[in-house]
Image (cartoon, rainbow, N blue to C red; front, side):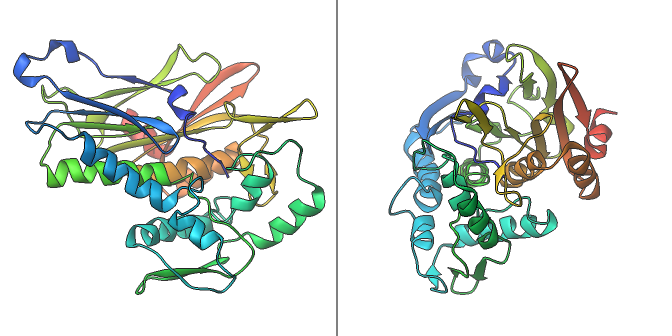
Amino acid sequence: MIQKTFPILILFILISVIALSLFLDDDEPQRIEGSIMGTTYNIIAFSEYDNLEQSIYDSFNSVNLSMSTYLNDSLINKVNYSDINEWVEVSQDFIEVLRYAVDTCIKSKGLYDVSIGKLVDSWGFGPLEKNQKPLPKDILYLKTQVGCDSIEINEETPAVKRTRDVALDFSSIAKGFAIDKVFKYLSSEMSIDNLFVELGGEIRTTKYKIDETPWKIGVVSPSKPDKIVYSFISSDYDSFAMATSGDYRNIRIFNKEEYSHTINPVAGAPNNSSKKSVSVVSDNAMIADALATALNVMELEAAMDYANEYQIKALFIYEQDGKSNLLFSKELQKVKM
């Protein structure tokens, strides 16, 4: 699974907001920027409301306080530090994220698994700094603990409990959920019809800007970050959210060898794949976030089969003969036609 440290993915995506300078004065957007969850966020909102900054930050931070493993008193760490088989009361937001993660874990046969927190830490991609590779015996033990059934959920209470020696890590899904939370607040509660929300390179937009032109989101080449290799157009979709997972920006070096932050939960070790990035478009950012991660863990052929089986709109960028190549799932090909 990918331990997506939050500052990375914005390097993969060139956000092209076309023709903002052409708006009339009455249509000037509010631009709201800030930092949260170890990364930055950028919001463009065409709204008559002022002073949205604090409410937006509070919405993001509510997810951070619940789901960040970097905060000692976060809800996720209360679960991680609990006794095995001890029920811990959590929020409905927490249950929503965990339920989708477990469902994806089952469908992917364990290649997407949020119970890999201790594996993530062992390779140095979590809150704990590591200066050496984990020992084979430690990896073997942790591999026996992770799994889709290592966490039980009580949706009525709501509460969760660990059934084995695992730690949850929501870094592959929490940013997407946070984007959805802010997007829902601004679009539903504040009735903002023209909106762009980006957090750490993951994005959700309305179908159009205020001048009835679409948002244009460019994906750059992993090997040439100044070159756009494909552009998503928001008006091509009924609802647009996009997340990208890549395995080449965040690495650890042990004994002069590079190890990607893409960790395969089944192998218990960093992935070794020709894929460089996967971008997924979905109706909401949480789903796009998790699915991009799941697909990036898989080998290319298996990832394409999975995307086609579950009708996922996915763009794969992979290396072949020293060149970056694009591959589109069947659902994304339908959009391109």
